[in-house]
Length: 273
Image 1 (spheres, rainbow, N blue to C red):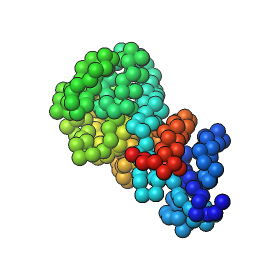
Image 2: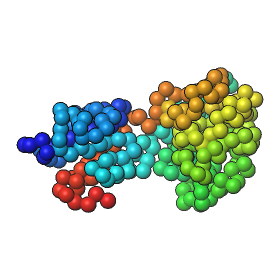
Image 3: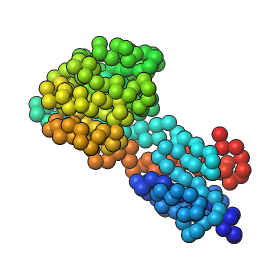
Image 4: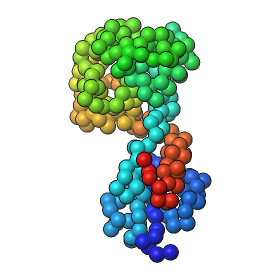
């Protein structure tokens, strides 16, 4: 086999460790395939082993086939992110004066795949679930009340626990600032498993100092969006995870499952989109 025929699969995220089984499934697609765990390879000239053939990249956000980028399936890491949120809520509920989650009201802001998973888990714990999304509509019977972001301030005083599961865009960036924080309960817990850019970190540091909310938890992905010298990083009642909640042990396997149909089309020369 000549170098120009080789297809090198580059695993572009250091935390995506392929199992032997997943690597074998990728290689089984075509005999020309080789796999390299070399994050950050910028171009073909620096491909592993001087490969002159084609490079295909696997990342957490999607897959690069020559000039075509295919996004990963929506919510591929939803389960571990939602479980991180529930772990944070359980930890907070059992610290200090113990409380049962079934006696608390949960507000989920953002009803993408991850937000809906949080709804499912909160409901399974017996929590009363409120939600905010862009339409103010849902067909989920586990949600007691749903509103658009305009009415976020009306729901916050009723929520013991608030989980932010939002991406950052023009409509959500900085959305959770001083006004929203000022509406939270003094016994409330705020968890962010979406983008940290949704939070006004200076306002949150001030709010935490005043005890409204009582505590906050951010996963590594959310925290990465917050400046290293932010006062929130020094707050005693905020927990900032050192890892991305989406790094559950099954995520890499689900990414490979999502990637394989695209790879099959690629080696057959079929359209990718």
